[in-house]
Length: 122
Length: 302
Image 1 (cartoon, rainbow over the protein chains, first blue to last red):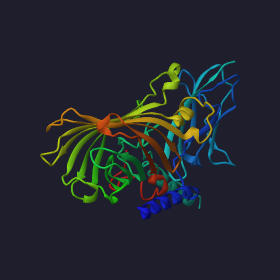
Image 2 (image 1 turned 60 degrees about the vertical axis):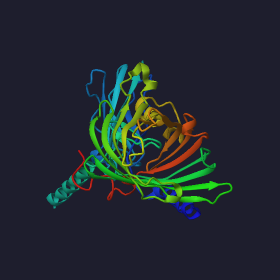
Image 3 (image 1 turned 120 degrees about the horizontal axis):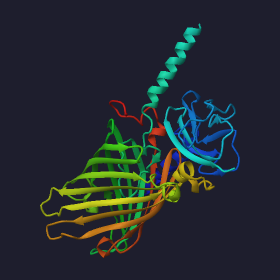
Image 4 (image 1 turned 30 degrees about the horizontal axis):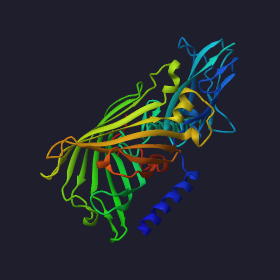
């Protein structure tokens, strides 16, 4: 039993120390505008921080208005200083509810996607 | 030269896209991540490793009372797209106050599971499977069964994204569960309906899909849940007896593993007279070792 407990503890410690050199799914960590938030003025861009670096060629953000018309400037790009940040520019937006749809591929090819809304109340 | 470079880039992009087709391995349906649960099985036929699962409970039934410590593992591997096989076992250690300690492996359990249907938009999944408890493979000292038991099972999972914007606090709720009919090979043993489900509230889903309420880590990565793990015997003089536990707990997600802890509360005297506890680690082997795991042995996951 003691040996088994020692072995289990060893596995636990090994796993807790492992994650610094491996990669995983890129999930949304936080965003600006914030997920589900209400802002008073139009943002210039939508910016998402992911839990992992993403592959620029296969990672996009799309922004849609309440009529489901795509309104972003179609210039999704990864931040030069931090490859875990994906950005898309948006024009001056009117008051309303907007939907952000993201698709990313992490650097080890895991694919994830998601969406969220934000509201502009002028 | 330019053409050569372009060809190289196209080849790299192709390789990346081919790799991407195997993505969304463990537990995703649409935008919803369904975590592997502790007391009941989830509906996913994917590469998973639970190591260890450690539980402790005080037994005081008909025999002499004892403290029981169990340490177990489960390993599942996707063989064909959406079809996985698994193996699990538990090492049992029973400490009696005035008697020698009993310890040894329980019977080996083999499972086969197939994801039958999935709907990303409605965050719903249904799977079927067969669980086989192999009689006589464990240690006699811990009272392992000498007979085998076959249990065909139906598994399900459902997220509640359909709750509209007005009911946004309910959107992070999800339920997973299983229903199985056991068939022991011993004529003396009763058949039983095995059933259980987990009601979970995903704070990561709340934060990243519904509303960022400003939760900081580690709370932003936690999933509180309550699991109900039950068995109702059906015949051979024991018909109608339901035993089981209600298991409130919490799961904590990281990119590479999930740590979970639950209390195990018996629902009646026949289920036990003491509250137990279980701690479990699920290792996301598809993320840790993406070249080996996260894809079927044969074929491609669609």
